[in-house]
Length: 171
Image (cartoon, rainbow, N blue to C red; front, side):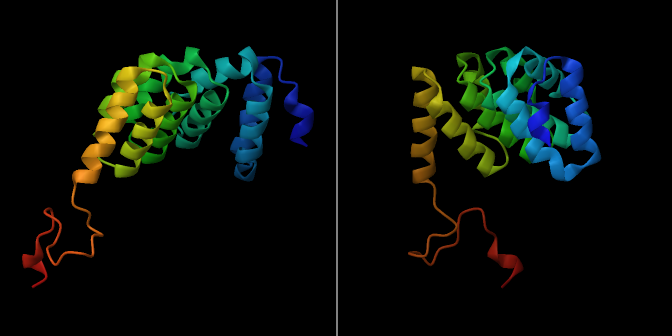
């Protein structure tokens, strides 16, 4: 069905496709795939406008599509999503910036290495490693080295609890 819509020639066509996904949430993934396959200025324009949408799934979809189509024009619009309230949106924003590979994202991705969610930190390190920049790669390697030096809460070779665990409540 969506194969017919791959000829998205205007922003109105793209907006109608988003409406379809809004009405039928099972179509979000096929709509995303259609938008990526089409690419082009119409898709890029609507997706850039959608990164600030009030609905999480629209922000997430927009960021994912922009990363897939490697839209360097989207970089300044995606950067604010690195502090989005939704972890999934932050994670997708980090991945998109890594896919785009724009050096302008490096300082913000470095700051994201301190995100409260470890998975977002891991994604930020991976994104930095994919950007063609000495500063980005150095930050990624430094973060990875720092992680190796941390005691793991899953380390079974020690009887000592991780340093951030207080056993007094359970003993």
